[in-house]
Length: 224
Image (cartoon, rainbow, N blue to C red; front, side, top):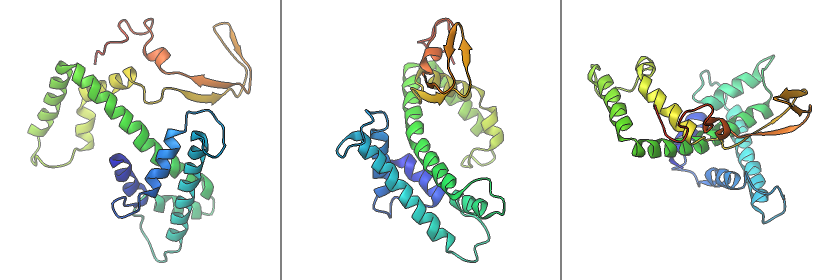
């Protein structure tokens, strides 16, 4: 919930500490029933999932409408303002409904995948004390070069953290934050003797590549 609170405050100025927490509860219901038997019957997890999404979209719509009523605002304070300005353009790149769906996806993706990624990272570093030491040393080297030790990380510092980047990528390989992805074939595809007709629904499982011994010599052990 902490990650969601930070992201919601940045994107839509939603303060979880002063709200009733309904948005988080609706998102949680959505996440819990996302990969379940798709029976949209009251009482099922999938029904609660769909209701959760419906309720969040309603809240976002209300926030957008309230923000649009504010007159005289000349600068954006968050991402919601940016989207409103885009929708108001003479030739907007998105509709209001698209903007709302974008907000919904960003909020959901920010806490669900981020929390999973952090968990995988902690597990990876716990199992690899040498990697943790090198990661710590890289961070300490950056701090030593700063004039102000308490300053926030800069873009140049971030780009210089090569080992940190390797650790992140390796942790995501071992514990993918998206166990499956769904796509639709927009044309007939032939792969290694298999024919996938246009219109087919495809489920992609990243771990089949990430943990494939043909691709990685020792796939279940991390080597950042």
